[in-house]
Length: 256
Image 1 (cartoon, rainbow, N blue to C red):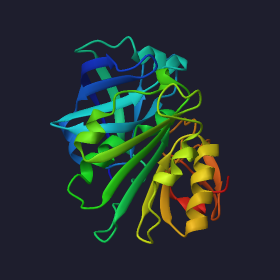
Image 2: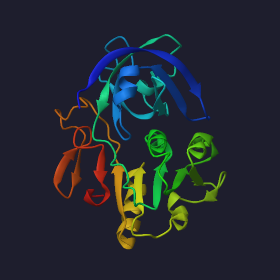
Image 3: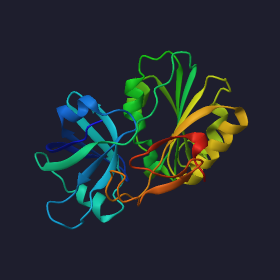
Image 4: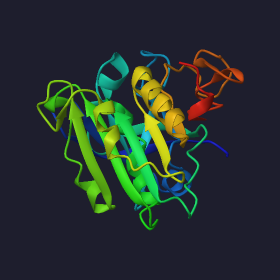
């Protein structure tokens, strides 16, 4: 797919929890073509510092607008929290390989996300809103500060189950404590994104029960186009780049 590099105006920046922000910008051309699981590369400042763009999963794309969901942890993402309505945003995208849409005969669609790994699943939930399968989001966070209202998922017909490390919201423990919410059916399809140990536990669960799935991987990126090889990860097919060969991979092909 051809990448689009353009400058778009910021529409809104909202802090949706003590930890997470959602930034919306007007981008009709991008919103029309981006697919669930793909990401965009944003130039977070007008100068040369930081030099490299920053990658963000597309959280939502509708009505000519694109949204990203992020946690300000590094210099680049922290700079985004200062954006105001009307500010220009230099964006390259869409980039990467998207999720495979579930077949019509799939009876259950399961999203398993940890922390900021929930980012690619809102646009996915929008895309499969009309699918007849049961849809479940299993979400894990460190504490109440690392969760947020998920009414948009519920409006798309997704059942939301939450686990936190300290038990301040939902079930106490890792997101694996929620695996009992998954109905073991041969047609069940699992999609996951989050910390590698979490995705490794999802992979182990899927293998035990013979379930198919896909994983969206998160790595530090420089070029975003597969040229620098800086985001390479081990797979059963050898080392592959997250930005170009992924970020979505067959769950069974990942080597943790």
